[in-house]
Image (tube, rainbow, N blue to C red; front, top):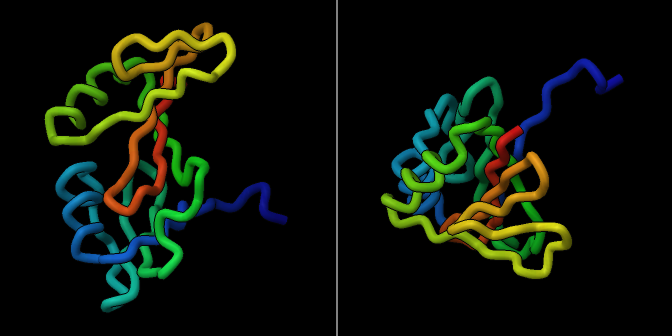
Length: 126
């Protein structure tokens, strides 16, 4: 079945040009396949991220991709903030403390941000 297969994050965007600026320029992902004007496949670590043009971009109210950054989370947050990325603050999360842009939940830390279309991404310390 699928238990030994890799999965790809699939993220809808309205404009591939804006997506390229964000996913390549801001996040630093490497394009590995271009599907013309409809989609781009990126490589990030050992995973793939498919960014495709869709009229439904940004309509999901949940996280579309989670990046495991380990203990570097504060450094990664600062790096993205320096590039103009704004972070989301979720005050209603139980047993969570917000320190700057990083949410702390016991021994796990997380930070959320949106791409230009409003898709929500997360970085976690695990």
